Picture 1: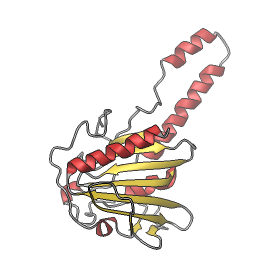
Picture 2 (picture 1 turned 60 degrees about the vertical axis):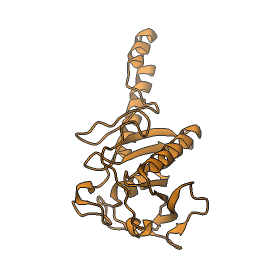
Picture 3 (picture 1 turned 90 degrees about the horizontal axis):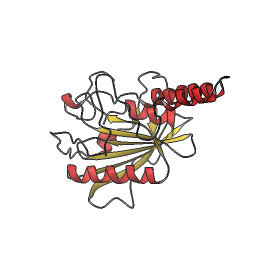
Picture 4 (picture 1 turned 45 degrees about the vertical axis):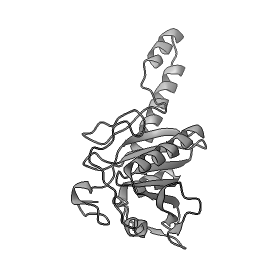
Length: 227
């Protein structure tokens, strides 16, 4: 996405969120294939079990980070960004109406009717909450954004959303920072159906976004939405 500031975001906080999800899923598939191959190789079963027992973990606590960064593996607020201030801009202005895939810009994701609509059951303490659907004509992503007047309230809401997804049986496939300065945090989940996904995105300036849809599609919107 280059260095173009998104929706008034300070230049030092800009930069596209990292493309992580598909790479992580690919890695999990490769690990699974290796484990299966070892299990079914002819020969001594004991030796095979020993080989697979030492393999990398692909469980819910595995994390992925962008190049040159190391994301914390503890809870959502384990390492808060030291200089976080609330952006009071209206959510509709920040979210925009279009997301262009930086890899394949031919057909953008655009905001479907009726646009950004208020959330009826907004979380306690929210300054604003909106929901909408982005589509490229074939696939859709549901997006909910909640803005708070304090960083503490933002962090609590992100923790609650992440905890709810874990309780529902979703599996973390990617977790780490978002922006090039190390701020922001994301959690990407593969849902129990093994097909759909949910991405929770904490901006660290007072907003928590939740994206739902097919994995490939949520990855595109998460990676290329300027918020």
